Length: 118
Length: 107
Image (tube, each protein chain N blue to C red):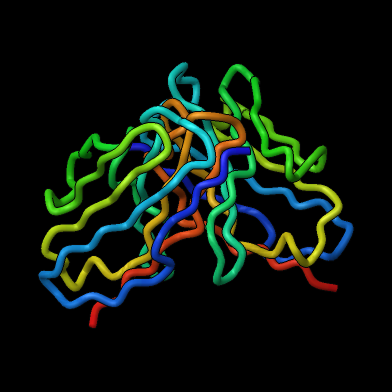
C-alpha cells in the first residue's frame, strides 16, 4: 500500500519561498497511472487543491495560485516537491501530499503545518 | 472553475439516524464526483469515487448517488465513529475543486 510523508520547514516569513517534499513508499512514483498532488487546508477551513504532477514531469496547477507554484519529481529519490513563492499569512495551512488515478486522491500523507509569520 | 456547494454546512444527528449530504456542481461533471471523510486532526479519507462506487474497507452504510450536477452522500444508521467533516470533490474539470464541507456531529 502506498504511503506518503511530507517534510519541510514548519515556519516561514512573508515573501519567502516554501519548499516541501513528499516521500513515497510502498509503490512506484514512476507509475504511469498516478498523479502526485498537493492539497492545503487553512486552519479551521476546507480543502484547496494546489496542483499535481505526473512522473513524466507534466503538471496541472490551480490558477488561483498563479505563477507562485513550482512542482518537480525526483524518481531516483521516490520524491516529489512543491515550491510556493512570495508567501503571505494567507498561505498558512496544513499541506498534504496525496496521490491517485484520474484526479482522485486515494492516498494521503499525514499533513504538515506551515505557518507564515514575521 | 467548477464550484461545488454542499448542504447542509452542519448537521447534528442521533446515532442510527440516516444522514443525507448533497453536493451541487456549478456545471455538469458527469460522474466525476468523489466523497471524503475527515476526522479531527486526520487526513481526509476517500469514501466514494465516481459518484457511487464503493471502496474496499469502507462500511456499507456509506453510499453515493447522482450525476451531472446533483450528488448525494448517504449514511444509513449513523455510528458514533462517523462524526467528521465530509467533503465532495470533482475531477471533471480543471482546476479540481472541493466543496466547503459538511460537519456531522453526534447528538
